[in-house]
Image 1 (cartoon, rainbow, N blue to C red):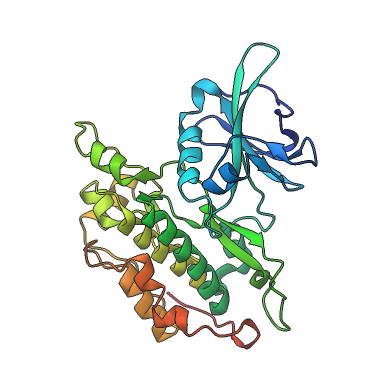
Image 2 (image 1 turned 90 degrees about the vertical axis):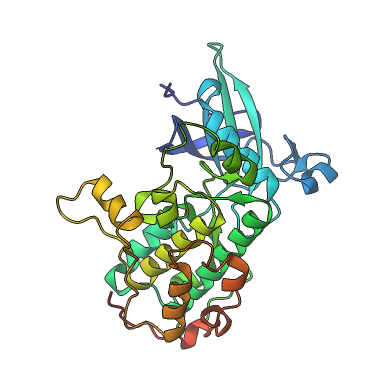
Length: 329
């Protein structure tokens, strides 16, 4: 059930403004702490446990909330964050709480780090068809891979890596160099673990008779996810390649043709043997990096830790020296 009014806040937070209506009847709002003092909330990590649940909430945060009966996916997202909360490349979760409204309804809310830089999808739109500077693409790609390595090492797969789910958080330690792009002062962090699954969950679902239900965003789905309904870390790597293509040329790696149904589009990728076209006009290292992401056999696809050592990311050019080249697909 969608909330028909603002709840204005919870025990530890006050709603500033509603940002959007999210998936699964979830409301997403910008909020501020109710008190500037350290707050006792449900622990999100071992570090919080050692601190006795005492957390200093930032001046602004993002709160996702839903009625308790609609909060199963929100609770799943919070549980996933519990596993890798200490990773700097994953948006931070500050905990959760339940709030009782005057009408007796219960609201479940989760508190997250605020990304003032917005998301990667909006940044790509800002740059347009020319794509982002390759130096920024390298920086963001490295951050995403570090986050994925953490997620995969904890036995999880994100399963919905896309530009909209990559948030940009200012890094105060980064001083913008002369000639560098405006985005160079931001770090990319992975967010939105709505459909993330542990290896145990994936194995359990393989035994279900009704497992043939696709989850995720079609443009970023891997061939094995479509054709074999096979989920796992390798799916995230394929999706990362799609994100890198989009950063480089400002256009999705896959496009739905005029008049083409979603089913036909998925058939092209899952059964038709189609892989994204590698953009021309990019460095050889970038081309080779994408080829490693788009290996159709998931067992032969490079994993996150191996991609982190690829020359495309090792030979990092300082922002001020990196030319902004036009890229064609």
